[in-house]
Length: 115
Image (cartoon, helix red, strand yellow):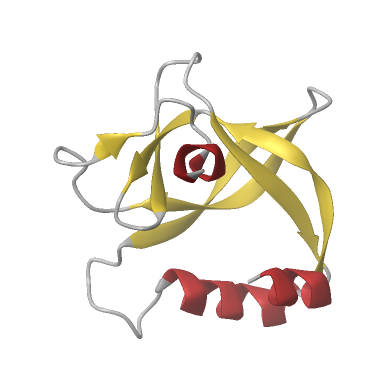
């Protein structure tokens, strides 16, 4: 994924999304939250060729008509807060299956959680 982003995008900022983060398996899943105190940590990238990069990202996230329904993730435009406090609309892959039996990642940062 890093190579894909390096080739087709540029890093903009660390960011936060109003949601909760769960450990699905060896990977995380974010879901929206109504609580403004909930924030999933992530990064925002500017895609140089979205028509090329988005299908590749969709493949990675197993999102779209080529994958069994319901897809594990859905890609939606969501508001995220950049590190400088500015908000932007960005594509976010949201977990699309039940969360009842999943572990909540309280730090909201999957990388910190797995260290």
